[in-house]
Image 1 (cartoon, helix red, strand yellow):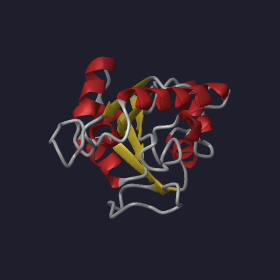
Image 2: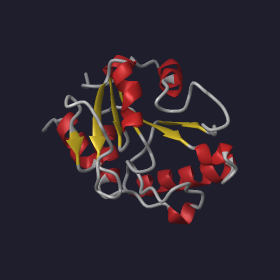
Image 3: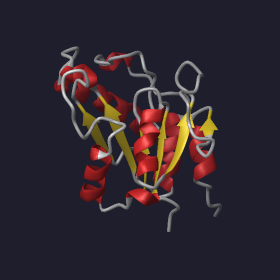
Image 4: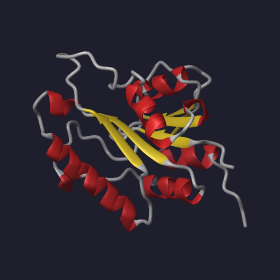
Length: 181
């Protein structure tokens, strides 16, 4: 039995570089070690679920079709390394124009994932480069790790109980010990 029912990852700034309002698939760049980190989770049999805020859709900066094209490129780049995501959930809303239950730090998308996939949210790990990525997981009773953003800095403030790691790969290596054959 694995240590976690699932690992929830933020996308922009955690899994891929975050240039801001990414709408062009040709600009997708996996963060160093990200594909290996996802692969370690795949090998351990732990579902990998991306939950991402995409307010650029609601703000009219890009369309849902643009989002899907970028996401397809993320998944294509992971597949080149033999890694895969199990599910992707996103909030398309403009936080300045509407209030919703799905935009992080709210828990709506995580609860939807739990219902869809039959997982216990208090048995999950939540990883992101922003405190708002971790807040839902902590509120739901899970474990969280803050990774440095693309600029090498840590968002904050964050509880001293939340480990900070330089990369997604470092976070996964620490949180999910590899079982040796």
